[in-house]
Image 1 (tube, rainbow, N blue to C red):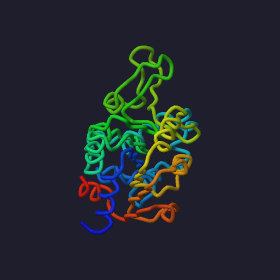
Image 2: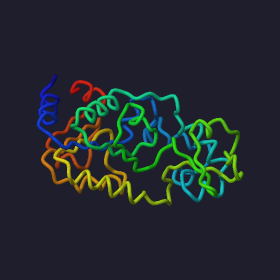
Image 3: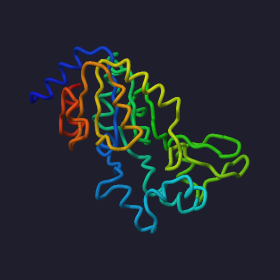
Image 4: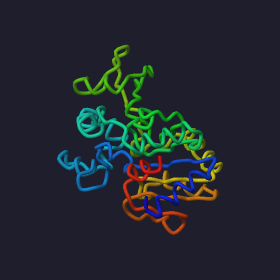
Length: 242
């Protein structure tokens, strides 16, 4: 282990209330594309002749539902993805009582698949879907296997993924619980995020604890505030720790 990895291990050993806040970089190691890289989801939207902000907006979903679902099923729903070293390590940290909450910007449900229990999904989840009329719930598998627009088997209304689109607000309950955990934490580990997407990135400002740790392949605007910055793969770092 190098010096920074050893320092992180020491921080974790001496912490009692760790919170993890993660972004797309956690999921890319499970071969799920991020949004803004050259091969990311924003680039994939170009063939539809719409901007990413348009196509992933609530207005587009309402007015161009069929096109939305074509893109969504092809580029957002990675149902065969498996948890990677980062997901598995975090679940183990929770199991031994060190990690109290995972706050994620990802919508893939991989933290839960790895065994994490306290997961707060800021942008919703592809695994949750509901009828816009009667609120009947549907699995991601149901959505993926339907031709065209998925409709409710009860009332035939359109089904919407329970994810936050442009033009929609974040869930207040999820935000409040996330803030509560961050305020209580003595160590906040932030991984796989450049911390530029707001309002989610602003959650870091609620941290008043002892150790702020940033693990990301590139620098972030919050690096100067951190006790420890590690510019490496989040999965590799956490695997060495656990």
